[in-house]
Length: 86
Image (cartoon, rainbow, N blue to C red):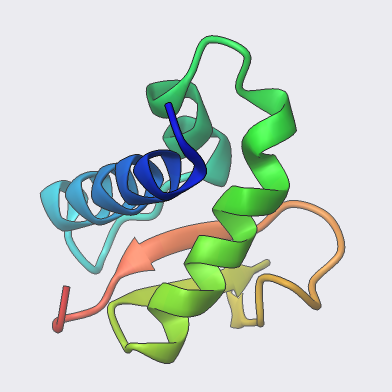
């Protein structure tokens, strides 16, 4: 799978899971990575990068301990959820 194909797969999975759960429920970024590949751990930085892109587009909300954060600036676990634009 090429990098653009992998990025699109991650983006689709992220938006699909988030939309399925709705704005009131969140997901762990590792769920997206696990859905994209068996060897998912190396994908975590890419998942955060794509989350940042989707945050900028207004489709994803990123939180840490219930507060809005930027996925590339937050250290530690984050959660993703759909916005009403997802």
